[in-house]
Image 1 (tube, rainbow over the protein chains, first blue to last red):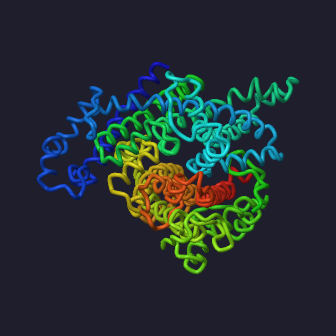
Image 2: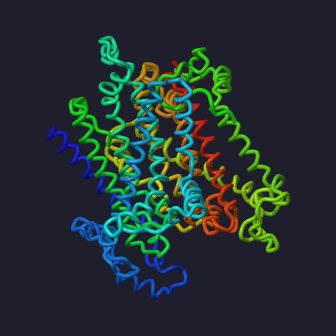
Image 3: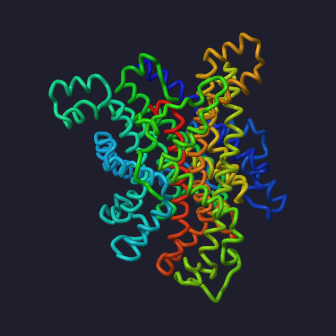
Length: 319
Length: 310
């Protein structure tokens, strides 16, 4: 197991280095002149040159990359071009709201998807299965910003039960926090539950066809006994992988939900940095979003190998 | 639209669509029983429903100037924020523009966005995946796949956002951004398929007979990997439509005043209490379009994957 963990850990390093390279290329090389991209077309050539000099942007690209990489390794992602705050501090301030939203959404997704997936798989071909399958597909297709707006319209504008937007940290006022977070959590959770439900259904259907399940049935175990005690546990292994990947995607990608509900999270930091042309913050935030995905992937792979020993034997990894 | 019947999409070995067991791309020529496939497709009610909606959307997009009752861009200050009425069946927006007309023209943007960005993703993913899987070696394992891994580490919307932000807000740049963010999936898929197919006997026979690389790739490999690529492309259309709407919602897609469902929803959010009808229709249009592509993609997967048919 230790050998697997070490190998998997080592495999992540080149990916992370490539991620830093891609982020750097994207932000520094694509716009041509970074000073011009940041200051805008109306800035004078002198101002652009001075800006580039002040931020080391006139140095050779490989020097700029290595300097930035050295900073990243020390936890220094540079300073915001808007107010000079360290980018790492900005990210640390914004992450708690996003983590709360992502974890809450995955909790909702799991609570909805696992029972729904089990019912759909065990009652395959029935009306319940069809309804569940179509609802899952609808859940995958509904744009989150629209669902969010409809919920705001009903619960905030019409019924006035919940605030339309805003955010109160959990540590300041848990009740108000719940009121502001429940709609975004539900909107995100429902979408993720659609993915998870489809995965649970197909995974359980695969397991239910296996010999050991037939043996358990032949022993006289009831249908639900077989499902709960034998099949569901094994079916959960791939579901766990998917939910890990979903969580990783959410941590870095809750841009839209945070935008609709005006939650000062990590996704909004990315959007804000785009509109303030703060490319240094954008670079740091995008890097952290990708690094979070790599890190969660790593944890999921290790968990997967722990739960399913065949992975270690074959040395398989899902990269 | 009937949304009742066969379950879709999940690899759970559905009883074959029509049970006729037609051979699909399998032989070296990759000639599927297209007619039988067509029959099974029509009988797969969810896929057929998806295809019908896509067809309607295409017609609406093409005939927008004929179908739209009003100019979608020109403000009409005498008709600001009007609720649905016989003159404006879906109401008007904050500039008095007819929502139905904007919805009809918006279909052009969404359909075009899907086609262009998925086309771009295919234009990158297909050749790169083919070459990587066919030739293998250092460039495949050491460079292309590692780059793909790194690209896939970015949440796709974040990657698209960053590219669109750097390139500047416009429809074309949004298409490039979405296309690039979708490309790694195609590279991986195509490469995986090529790796499986290149070891098959008829490909080896081609090699033994002295077939050149281009001939092998074009004649023996490509036709036999197209089914999963087609399914992925259809599902990616759904993802691209939602991504375009998301970028437009954030102000990084097509720029006003041209109608875009995503941007119109962004505007509608400011008028939720005064004019809720502004929020209903663009969102519903995105939902129906994405659902149609998803139904079509899921249905194609059921029909084209032999494991799901038997």
